[in-house]
Amino acid sequence: MLRRIATLTVVLGAVAPAAAQAAPFTDRVVRPSDSSTPTARAAQAASSTSVPISDGRAITVEFTALVGHQPALAQSYVAFLDSLPHGAELAKLRVKIADPREMARLCGGQESDGILACYGAGRQEMIVPSSGLDARTQDGGYTVRYVLTHEYGHHIAANRSNDEFQGGALDYGPKRWASYEMVCNEALQRRLFPGDEADRYRANPGEGWAEAYARLTFPEQPWTFSELLIPDAGALEAARRDVVEPWTGNTTATFTMAPGRSVQSFQLPLTLDGALKATIRGPRGSEVGIRVRSGDQVVKSESRARKGARDVWRIGAGCREEPVETLTFTAVRRGGADGPVTLRVSYPG
Image (cartoon, rainbow, N blue to C red):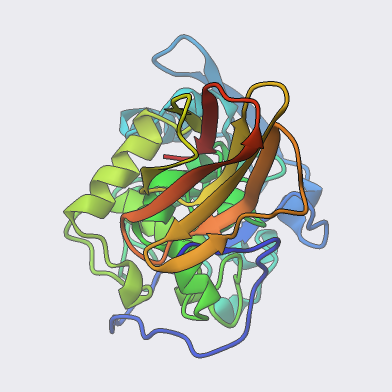
């Protein structure tokens, strides 16, 4: 049954186990509203350079004082990022190259946290180590190429729409991937924890998305996050589409009940989570209503308290409980003038 939520925040509960891995990936995402960390305060860089990308625009790359001005390093990083699956959001990115010893401080963590890099959504900036693309992180588990790819996954999410859910795509993942992985339902079941960068980091779907994105380039990298989000072929295809064909808004289905009929049902399969709105209109002087069901469950019963030639039903943020959840909309003519009745449904897909 489709379930509605008005606002979904980080909830408490048991965490799904993550696959065992000697060197789990750890980074930090700073949201625009968080002013408590150096990434959000945009600490002064010692120097910077502008590096062109393939679409003719350019990315600003900054260096900390400890790293010093290294334009060749900046060019290699930007060329690698330009080679990843991406869209127009690449030109919005800022990159700060820091010494690995600075990472915890710049990313607002502790030395013991093992932070490899971070992404600040306010400035759309990734802070990454200066070791070079083919160097390995201090724990030995990842190349710097992989670190850049994971951080770029956060940048993609920051530029994709899934705004019906608190924290949007940055916390839930972009629309198609998050819907395929049933993130909303798993969060309601307290098995995933959108936006939790602390205690339930490995069950945070925002991090799971960044890892799934990285699998488009590094499919053999061991998985270190929630087992619920281990990507299969469908998840990877959803992730790819979120990158190259960003979801931009709802679509509309229109159904018509012919004159002379008093009841008619229409079915609509849902494969994406998000906002829904159904509007029924009859001719002037008629009285119409809507019933909505998901399987054998009533989502909206017909309301006789509302009279007139128009009725509306909406859900601000609907969560599917099945990969394909079919809603049945029943148009009802209760009386008044005859004539065609139109039912329009706005849905995410």
